[in-house]
Image (cartoon, rainbow, N blue to C red; front, side, top):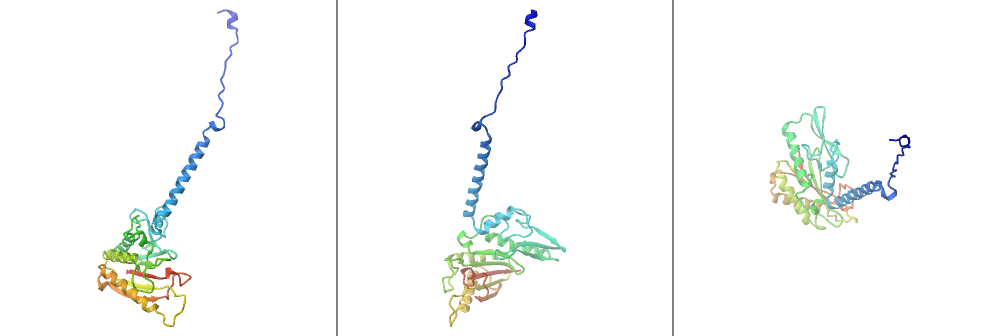
Length: 272
């Protein structure tokens, strides 16, 4: 190689590669994917709200918050305690459960609860689960389930069947139960045969907007309680288990307005 060739300057050409401009980049795809995912989640939420009952929605909510010590009426967990958390307190057991119409309160099983007592509470909870569909499926239709609220209290399992606006549980002014009421009473009788607890029946009415000289609320309330008793006995509950049939008329409203349809209700209690 000649000296002139060896002294020739070496030129290195570097090709500069620039980044994508604007729409050629990929950042917008990430943002779009997040948007589509959020919209899908939103429409799934709207579908669930429309396709489920109130009790099932509470079960779903409880399923995703299983560690709270106070639980609504329809624990949705799939574990041994079905979404509830039992707390040890003074060597007793508190099982959090509450009604749909009031604040949640713990239900004590007892400081010295025996195995039989604990089993009795578990049986009542299983009946509640079957009625309201805590596991996702109820034994009654959605139409009938709209009228039902359950809660486990110190007294026992309270099954409340109440009227809705335009959907009474009895034919107006009579003791003739509507189809949803018959369905609920039949199912209550069916599942109540799984236990031997005493049964108490209470009938409540809404206040009439006009005070009558001869107010029939006591007779009507009594007739409806008696009809509920007959329906339960026809469904298989032994007569000897019926401990109480009570007529409360319009004396115990559950809403601020005592004339609201919600106050017309039956309470069936499987006593502890």
